[in-house]
Length: 430
View 1 (cartoon, rainbow, N blue to C red):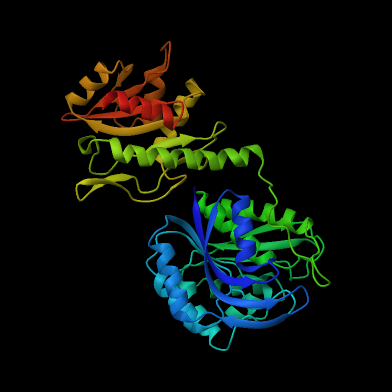
View 2: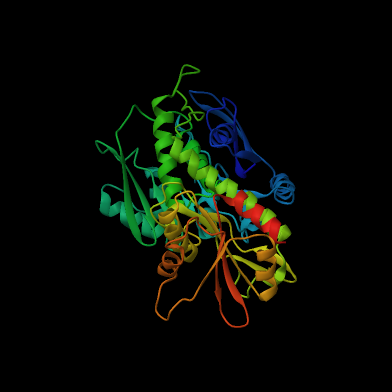
């Protein structure tokens, strides 16, 4: 099961903090591990008391989780002070998984959730190592030092907060516009995300939103898609908020907004991810060229590489064994994507392709396995997709593999209906 980590405070009424994070991630099929940074005594009216966890206990929790679990994405929530931020930043500085920072400063009921040492540590230690930070208006003003009254201020604040390469999602719920406009600052550009304004967002909306993003990224979605899908879900969560006390209502983190096509996108990632692990176990090193191999798996309605999943930075030989150099995500196998799209034009059922190469013995093994192969010769300047198109024209059935002799070795594209089908063919060959 895909697993994420939330590093945040405990909310005694269960509307925010780790309690809300666990429920929000579960709604997207992700198991949430937790590191508790503070215990709060609060209800729907006020925060009565805050007990920040000792730094060594935060460290022990981090060590326990990170040493054992295959964490796919991490979020931070309430961190309270510089000492806790320092421990978290040191533990995650060399992390390989996405880090989402929700810079929690004030509870919905209006009480501060940080001390005087927090701000400098947040800006100097945690923001430079995260992939995305998700402030509301007040938090963005504090982090940037800029009073935000209009879109120019929003842009300037995002530039200041993201000056070291961090992406910023400045949430627009407190900006006072007729519609709610969230601003995603990514690669020096701003994307506006508009939604109808609902009743005031209840307790836990910021925690739930960042948890939805984290879970989406744990499921393999890219940053932009993760944010857009999370925004749809938080809209529903706010619309379905409910009261549990005499104060502010709490948002509903357990909503399931996923449409069939959204489910399919996540299923594609998970299915390919499982296949990659098996490929690494079974594939002989000699069929992996120096620049690596990849496998691509398309959604049934794929229109381009953005709808086709692959292994980021490929699978390569490292210290005598196969190693994946990145996660499975959409858009990670652009070259193979065009090969696959051309194949899908000929046969829509062919949705998976894997690259590899070998000498004459590989071709003999494929023949012995009764593979239907078509040999091609790519002309100078001709795209691989055109070559694939020409190769399958006139075929009664789509081949198992398309091969191209390149002198001392032969390049192979092995096709299948899905990753399981490709694995079945690999098992026949090897």
